[in-house]
Amino acid sequence: MNKTATQYETAIALCKDIFIKKMKDYGTAWRILRTSSITDQIFIKAQRIRNIEDKGTQKISENIRSEYIGIINYSIIGLIQLDLKNDLRMELPADEVSKLYDLHANEARNLMEDKNHDYGEAWRDMRVSSLTDLILMKLLRIKQIEDNKGETLISEGIDANFHDMINYAVFALIKISEK
Image (cartoon, rainbow, N blue to C red; front, side):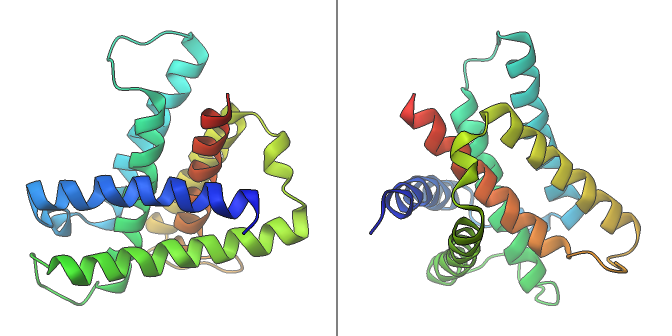
């Protein structure tokens, strides 16, 4: 397994561990969230990262790393919610959620591998702040798609933007861990 694949798997394993532990604490309370609420939750996290990057200081002790983890986990929640849009269950069994988590994390990883093949791991030469900006741009795109009732003329859908945000946030986690 190459370096990126190993680093990617390590980051996703960390995120999933936190996700599963929070699910044990809270259940699947996130099932109440509409896609727009998930998008806003991710926006808050990305905007906090950008503010800290711009100001160079922070007053709340929760670090940027934990915000990127939250972006990954909320993006996976968004993908699960899109899959289960007609499923009215509020509580889901832990094993079902774990499988859905893995499904979407694997889809994102496969996309990352395909893009890395074509782009030659260009993300390694990017700044973490640029990854933050790309996440914010994807969020604005999702908001526009939501405002258009999910319709697009030529662009990718909401799910593709969630996958990209997962990958950008994983790249940020990798770059932060390499510092």
